[in-house]
Length: 284
Image (cartoon, rainbow, N blue to C red; front, top):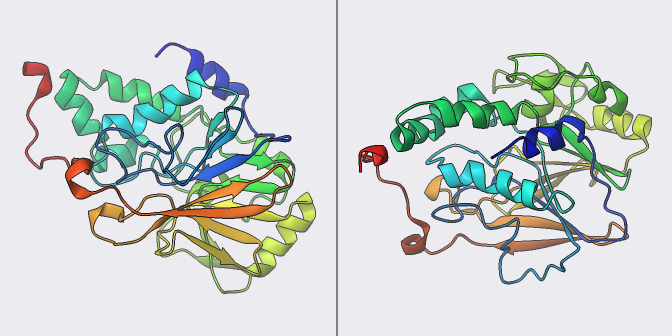
């Protein structure tokens, strides 16, 4: 891949879906033996017009059996269709996490060095941390930060770095909504728990209607929080090949009216669960 991805992502911050349908997805794993098909090959129940926007809330290099296709597929699609596909960085789009959950090992196995892995993780540094749909829906992988009250503050974050262990960039990728007041300590060890009052203040200050996020497994594919001011979307069915959950895609029409497409995992025989004893491909 040339510099198309980095040059696009350097200036990218928000998605404007004027007059077109928008599809929001997240956590694109466990879906296909080689690559996530949702962006350009959605489930049969989806009928996407050529001009529709596809939008990923990140987590597309999620954990367990993370493969080359899960990472490079969405990147290729965004370069090929820059006006239709937008990717947002998630907490798993980092050097540390990809070394834990398989992508580092696969690159080493396939190519005999870490060069490809290094190039891909450098691209992660250029991905947007959040996006806005039609000025009304704030999209982020994790959640809010006590260090951020306005959208302009997000624009000032130097995102071209590895995900730090704390601070506003970390919070956007790791925080979760919780039935509490104010801010709470996250059991994840990164980010925060935030309550309905925090969301109300943030949405009012930025004149937005809702926050759309990923980051948490939802058995029904999606979940509303705080009187439909926060939405969690989960697009990886049967997560980790054992959770038994269905997945969802959020559909927005040109008036931001919402609908959900619910689907199940592909049949196990077509999904290609990776072997636990991989062969060194670069020797073949």
